[in-house]
Length: 259
Length: 289
Image 1 (cartoon, rainbow over the protein chains, first blue to last red):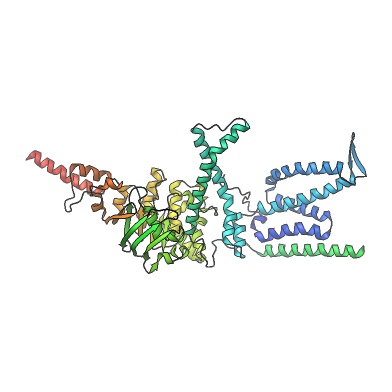
Image 2: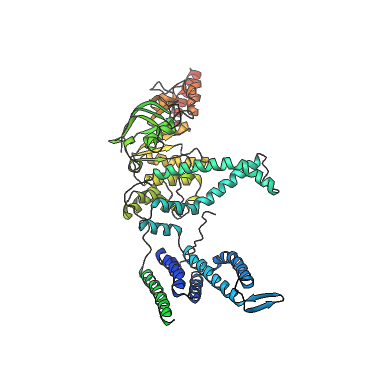
């Protein structure tokens, strides 16, 4: 594995959009339900995210993410449905187990919020090259050092993992036991710490030197090999999202006035 | 092209007592190829990093003397400015990959982006560097997918694209397999024909003898000798400095066979062939006579 990024180039509409549009989509998806004061807006954004992910042919990659969170959300539904304070209206009974409407509605709100957050972030991370995203931040004034720190993680971590595996094999060939019960594994960890840490420190120093001699700390304005990804579609989408947020706010104000 | 003047350089790493460089002085003309040899710990890498400005600007420590790259005083120049004139390639090709770029093409562009080179010029420089190092066919590959030799050539291309006047190669082949080493030496040979001033630290004495116009012999931070490969490798005291001469030089020393017109032992294969040819014909004459 050369990168821990989840990005895959599929040539889809979302791939062609700039990172700013997708980040604004996340902001709209998170803010609009709050502004409108109704979970149905969040539900609408969930449907929208699913459609976008299906269209981009990356929906399958969301399954592991949703699988893990799905398990947690199921426990939330069960616990809130059964035990939430203020549960008075039974709605479902399975033998002696009774689910209450108030708890289930509360859990439903949490499920909508969590799924909305997960799916809108998936729209960004599954369809955006990490280097494009960081490059856009740097173009807008983000520190290049911080940008490098963020982007290098995607490739350096798998390499460090491979190095650790090599060191583990080397120690194993010197007689270190690595498999067995928990105590054996904990004991095996100690002779690994020193070579792994030393190796990481040396590699980091050498990489820092390599960056220095390639002008990493130059103070002049940086240029970019890749053109900024931005077209008319980005502008339409961004304006549309802003309009949606404004409409959500207007809806909320009108609701207050009616009440 | 740039000339280098090294004047009375002394240097001690932080928190150490020993001088890593001890009063070294020499001059290098533009376009020269200087081989640097010596035992481990003799100061070869430190000298390279001093010319590149990493000593003292990165490592700090106690520094005396001066190094001039043309009109630039190295210790007073920021590394980000000096790197436009002096490029350096290190031993470990893996640690020279930035890790922030997904293709070889973008990786080579990294330094040019930092220096603010306009895009059209950037593309031209990258294409030229890739062609020189024969890595154009890898341009869309992930840098971590390359072999050691290919990665080292990419590292050299990354520096060459920045168009330095001086190129330093600090044991560029020590972590490579034989094929990788040969790929890098071929790349270095092409570089030497471009007229760039080159410093190369190597333990492969055959290559040092083949490429260098002059050789620096270091020991314990001191400059022992700076001379042509023929004169350096003809010395009989090389083992005292932890250095062995090229294999054919050793054979010729054992047979007391020197080059015809000089008082030196052959240091390249071509010279050795000539010497053996003369030796062979003399033997035949003696046999017939």
